[in-house]
Length: 311
Image: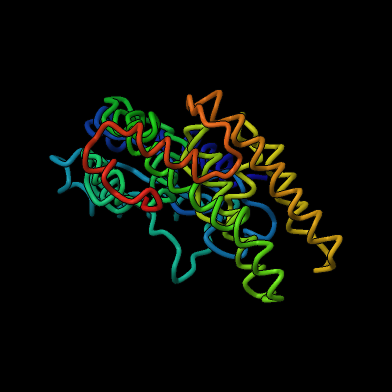
């Protein structure tokens, strides 16, 4: 039982007929759906999710010129809930998303800092990737004039190419610094806390690179590994390999050697993907070479002038 399925059915069966009856003048200008913060918006909700911020809910999005209708429409929305209590009412927490009636611009501004999303390359760099993922997740149940969906579809085209290369270059540099360089060095020092930190940062960078290669926004860290397994390019393979690294039982010499081999196998597959999908030419195994090549291929002078490690 998925929250999105319940919310969609409630909107179609209960809310839409009431909108057609009570607000026919607004219906051509309204958009409705469920997106943003929440496991149900990514389709990852399960039994554990149901203790908070889960259950039937939906946004109504208005054009800016109809912002004055926001409060009366929210009162109407709440009355529909009272008249037709859903089977799974939403349990709210103090820190969950506030879902209700917004203008289109308010929804995108709350996640991206502007009413239509980033425009310049610097703005694209400034928006957290997880917020971009939340801006395009979930479902749009209704959008008759298409204004909400137009922004969503532009965002779904993914980063401008220079921004994507900048971020991917930084991931390559981090992969080299963590897994390829510092893992065994810190193990030799028997600094096991840092070894764990290095492996975590390596896994994080590998996942980030995979999302960039697939031209998908990476979600909040809680769902990154799960979403990784859904990516068409290397997704399942990398998810399985990172799981194997995470399940390593100890720090014995044999196990450290196996971990190092797992790291290099992951790097080899990623380098193949960079050759095929990104046109990277270097055959050097150490990932700084790929990062520097990607950095040098950036056309924008400002982005290209930034350190390769910066994203």
